[in-house]
Amino acid sequence: MNRLHEYRADYEIMSFDVDYQNHAHLSALMNYLQDTARLHSICEKFSVFDLQEKGVTWVISRYHLHLHHYPEMGEKLTVKTWASGKHSFYALREFEISGADRKSILVATSSWMIIDLKDRRPVKINDLFPDELILNKRVMEDDFPVLPIIDRLDFKSEFKALFEDLDFNRHVNNVAYSRWAVEGMPPEMLFSHRPVEIEINYRSEAFYGDGIEVVTQKPQNENEPWIQQIFNLSTGKELARLRSYWR
Image (cartoon, rainbow, N blue to C red):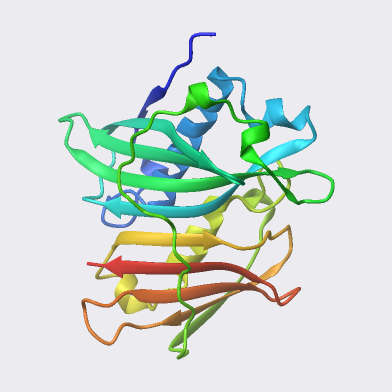
């Protein structure tokens, strides 16, 4: 089989993808990343639909995104993605978004696992993921260190996992976590700044109807990151940790 190492997909920023200032939401850009990864995996017969036949599925473990600028409604984008490596239980995937002028809008690296659908335990990638899919190139070097937890509660928000947050696997889609994190920021930040770098460590699944709590720690100066944790109020489990910089 002739492997397609890099996959490209084109998108246009729609009216429902933008905020009050006509700039794309972070969640909209992350949806484009997810959709391009889906299309690539379908081409390579490695999608969640293909894996489901084997009793397993993909879940994301980590995301690290750098945003150079936020595109506006009507702008046309090209998203490029490729598998960049694998190690034990983890497969790496890279992303690049560029505009019509070919200037970089966003780069991201991510880490994924394959889990058994019955016991929800990870399956070794080497047993399922062929070497021929790997393009040994990364958009940024990141070995995904442990993200910090908050040591001071400065802001707290609560949400509920909605029906439309669910994905094909019937758990909350990974993009919803980024939306909760953004919505969990103080209002003065939302109306004056945007995230330019964000790291997400997904730690547990959430399901329809779960109560969600986002706790946030403010930086002491502009060079320090915002720290957030997301908890499932229904179970007490930590769902995610986030570290972000806003400008």
